[in-house]
Amino acid sequence: MLDLRIAPLSILLLFTLLLTACGGSGVEGLYVANTADGINIKMRRYRPDPGAAYSNGTPVVLFPGITLNNHQFDVHSPAWLNSYNYRLPDDAPEWAWSDAAIEKDNLKYFSLAHYLYRQGYDVWMPNYRGVGRGGYDSEHGHPNANLDVWCALDVPAAIEKVIAVTNKRPVIGGHSTGGLCAYLYLQGITMDAAVVAAGNYLPHVTSSAELAQIRNQQVLGFLGLDPAGIPFYPYTWLLDNPSMFAGLAQGGLVDLDAVLPWVMSLLPPVIVSGALDLTFKTITAFANAFPSGLPQWANIFGALDFWRTANMNGYVEDFHARLVISSFYMGVTAQYSDWAINGVFREHWQNGYENRDVVMPPDRTVGDGYYYYGDNMSRMTVPAFAVFSESSALVDTETMVGILFDGKTKDPRDSWIEVPGSGHIDVVNGNQAPLVSFPAMAAWLNAL
Image (tube, rainbow, N blue to C red):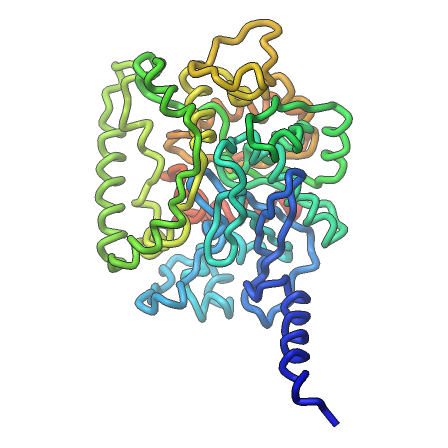
């Protein structure tokens, strides 16, 4: 006879075991990777619904851009926002009209994860430390984290987890910073995890040709969506001053994930998408009207023209504002600013015990002890494909072709495209994506 005194405990134990079997939390598709310095990185493995099987095809690991999270790769109608009743455009391709998931939720039409799943790929979407929401929020770690920490510790942990689970060589990449971290991973970069865990200062980035070779052998290819490098800033001569860098050097996590859900809950979709639409269409108009005879360093609107809302459905804009815009560390912003203002491509200028109190990033000198990413691009040997935006705000196509494709060891399968009428944000899931970039990515992946 069952002892009723222990039945509740048994039921609780059984429930716990069931949760453990499906990832430990009940969050759909959740997997957790632990970094070398002990931070839990959360990632989603895509399937259209909990009743569907995960794909057994080639894994594709997509990392998000700065101030964004893994939701950017799976646009959908939030369950709590039933006013999303988007209809497919008349020019939508046949595959979209015949897809059961898109028929149920038409916004899935803009989901890169869903499109690649349809093509037979196993899509994984990690979040860096300090980033994420909806059960996919990674642990924060120390507030002094920067871009090097994301790329040297978080990205390897996620990729190694995917390889361990699937026992397959993945294609790695992502949007903007996600693409950057993926190709730096292929350089063989790392950091002293014990020093990072202590949190007193950040160590130098190091790398080795041997580790780069191992990683390139474990990876099938690189897939970048406007992959980042040295960005374009206007008026760099004005920004290169102690006041500017003193603020950036303070570090800290800008925790937008803790604030935006409450703020956005107060605003109906028409207000959010309407405000975004008006703001960025105005910026695009001014950028296009900038006189060609003036120097580009004065084109502030060109630098801000990173979201072509004319290329994005209003519901997708609203989805971004509510679910995709995410937290970031000031250290990440600091590095991009150093690169743009000083024309360098290196680790954070405060890395290393001897540099922990340095405020102004120094000019490059021989033997200065910094790790320069641009010096080691040739260690990337896997085939690469990139989708670039037309606006070239934040990511300039010509600059990045030079850094990435001219810098890596060439492969006959290397290729890139530029999407007409697109900007840095909307190149991932704008109106052109299902028509232009999704099929182009699938064609390249299939050729691998």
